[in-house]
Image (cartoon, rainbow over all chains, first blue to last red; front, side, top):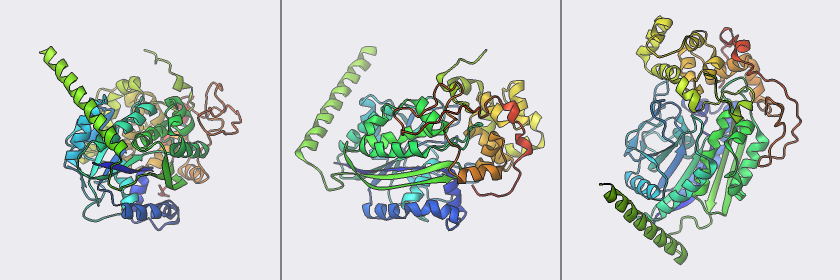
Length: 317
Length: 171
């Protein structure tokens, strides 16, 4: 059985990628940012996940205004870095995990989350910057396969925080019904407070950010009740992308161990936030009777759903 | 047709890119998207007005693009991630664009960011109805000081293009 062992929250500021790509990491401004991820890289090197699911948003790279999927799951074998106007970032091609991705797609759709499935997609800084922050700058290949989950937070309205949290739970059920023993880490990216558009650009709200991180760790359900209006008012128009962190959080246990946190202002226009949360039962091969029963029950539900789907389909014809 | 009023229109200095703006601004955003290709960037630079004829734009939208009035572009349906591509074509970083939209120089803007960014106090609400942090968020002291931080409209702010050519390229 596959298992989600930990969640990582991280900003994905494009300027961080530019600083990495242009060798500026030792400049004091950037050192302040990167020093906050040294422990995280060590943690990741030790954790060695078999797969990472990275929840992020595309910034007019793979998706223009022609199509705006709310949730798009990358099921391809690989995802090349996108050219965001300065040539593709010099990072390795991101390898997918098509088998697990297809399983997740099938499971969560029958679990009533209507994902868009993407079999060809380039990925931009939204995905590759957090990977650099946690995996460093490998030359040839990333240490594990990645399943990208692109969320629309560009056009209002993005999915609600509650919807994101529930999708996280569905992803967890999907992962736990996958037969192969895989240890999975899930990333929620974006944020924290920032506004990069309009005369109010430059808005930062550290108090709000801190409260968000506290609740993310201890009381995530509280966060699921925050309306979009509050994200935009308190954390900036673009701060609304913090809803993506709730997908990550929903995929974890209700009670988690916060093993690391980092916060600094600014990177370019943005408050940088980072957190690592571990499930209590991290990584050891399953399976308590309870979780096995749970996963069985989930299997039964899916089987029932499949039958229903089949019935509806045959009625229609 | 007048824009449908939304609760988030109360946030000062902010043009929320919603479904209505997405519809209106399709031409602006697809024009910006076209600038991802080098050949298109060259064609645009060679004759901007002529190039813009390839897209379905209203005269106001065309005017805002030619004048690099970024706030007006947002108001007319442009999205920041798309208009940033126009900025990049002009050689401007994201932070330079942000400085333009706030009507400040890049130095001042960068200094504000280093100092912790723009405070939310006094920047929550145009109407002044929401001056304090709401319950779900941090218990901020919330001094109500309704200050009109722009968004009066872009016109006042369209000193944009003249500014921020400066080089300090820290992003």
